[in-house]
Image (cartoon, rainbow, N blue to C red; front, side, top):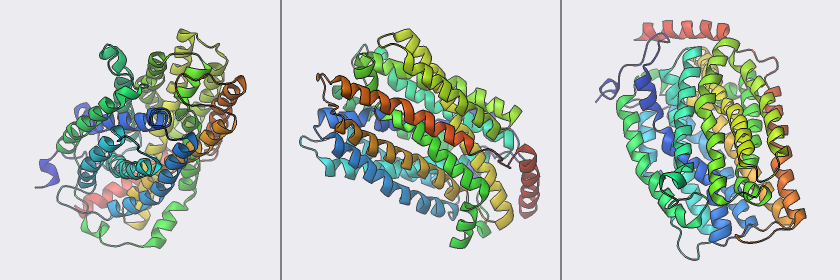
Length: 459
């Protein structure tokens, strides 16, 4: 079986993919987004509040796993770059990660009575490893099927938007099920796990069967040189992207783990309202991702990203000063923050693909898997730092995560400070990383033309 039998041929010379192909390819992002949202927002509170593991132990578990996972990503990325099969380079990795992810989701969302920190660490390791495999392969595959500067903004924008649709679906479950499933409720966690378990193989089937991928040339898959990887990672553009992505992950990441705590205890919303408030925040990505992609085509990717970071800081500040209990103004504030935050992943991932082209032109080898491993690792560092630091801080100020507990004013103030300052500071640092960034549309067009000429001659 060849790659061409599994999907339409990839466009040559930076052509435009059909919308049907883009949506089929992006469909894998739906369960990935649902799982990432559940892991980042709802699972920490579930194990701390319902299963009975202490806040410090839950924070330590997530920190340990994410730090281990950081070392895992570059290894997997390097292996992907050296993979060559009759069905493509990245498609087999997407397929292989699915059953592991399904099993990990079952164990995490259906923990036995008496599950402790060791149980949480074990199954977080399993599911985050699978999530790394599928996410890395999917992102690197996108760079192979969308080769032009502007087409990458379009494809990564749609990938983000489709993932957002899945996350919004999770948050709308209280309305769709008449309150039978509420993501913030411990009783609903097993049902959410089953939604993920069923959704992963279905959407992955659409992706792997309907999306194109060219078979890698043999010369690009046979050698491995650590010096070449180090040269790729120390490029000025890549250093900027890694540092910026870390800061941009730390910003929203510091709010994700304490989102339920903040809006329930500090802003006085019930659990149903807390879930609904995430709808405008995440749903804003449906509009935001395509808009930022269009703006990037007009003004350039890094200039657009810098503007988005400033807008994020403004809207996050406005959100914080809205009085508690005011649902509509808070929902509008969440939409504004989510709209600006949707630019971060879309544009950084598209810029990584551009740097990957420059490296392949110079070295004659594919390093895209490793490059994406580095930027996904920064997301994990951000998650590890945010949970590992903020949860102990909440414990130190006396915050109690259990349901039906009245926290002291000092504890609530500490919670508010954690939610306010860190995201603004980190996001502005991320934007500042792109002052003087050199990879623009004109430079990439020259690189891409040389690559296409070489690839066509080899074909």
